[in-house]
Image (cartoon, rainbow, N blue to C red; front, side, top):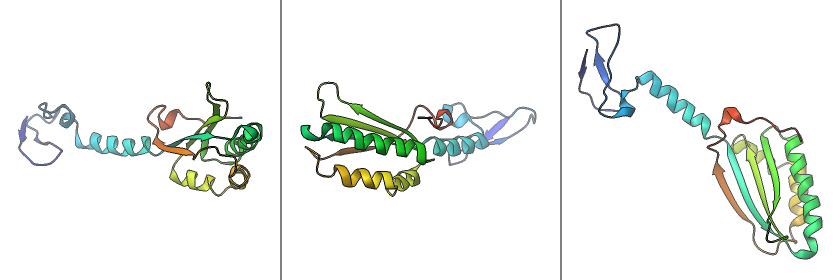
Amino acid sequence: MQMSRRSGPFPRFRATDKSKPEYSTRIPALSLHPSVWIKLIRRWDDLLIMIALVVKVTVKPAYRESFIEATLDDAKGSVHNESGCLRFDVLNEKGDPNTFWLYEVYQNEEAVEAHMRTPHYLRWRETVKDWFAAARVRHECLTIYPQDSMWRKASA
């Protein structure tokens, strides 16, 4: 089997032995058949659609218990009522009882936007707006592991 030179990411081959084409081994990634490349690219897009939000919230000490109650209402509403919300964890920082971390995983950007319009989120936002001791810090992340196919809707 002979390979012809060609520009671009996919090798072109001329089969002299039609049973088993050979691919370039100079660059390992190019040794894949073009159809495999296409499948990998489509799968890569699927893997990167889920959005994780990590939000750091510091509240005034007088509002700690009320903040927990309001945030649990939002978290439970998200997990129970939103098909696009796969996880909503409420964490309390070990060394600071007034610092909380919210870890939320959504199927995609549309699910995040839908969450921001839900009654339980709007109620939470209005309730806690004056309780912050510092500005919220929000990080938007793309999930890598577990992969999309490994996530299951949690039953809370």
